[in-house]
Image (cartoon, rainbow, N blue to C red; front, side):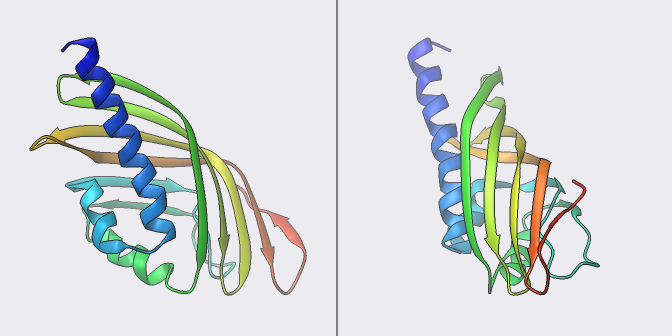
Length: 155
């Protein structure tokens, strides 16, 4: 593909990830679900928790998981900062990317702050770029439970 077309592809992938942050923070689940392939792989380590007993990890396949996000985040204010993309094209209609992540979540039970990276695969379907695999790994997590001071969670 020509460099001009790759530049357009790059901008479309950037826009895809920007929409990810905006749509999750504004809880626009109808738009959020359209960012992914039907068989998207979700692999998260370092999720926010509503209770201290909740797991920090999640592995799912498919877009049905978006309903779980909607339920989990119903009473949560989220702020995602996703920056510094590294995108590499692996074929005419495929790419992979790494993004730096810093997010704040204000849950009913605690304030969660995390730093890490998204590792993603993209595929172009019907002229649109979609996320086909999303891996999130934390470098650091700070949870401040409202009944005590800040704690460090193992990511």
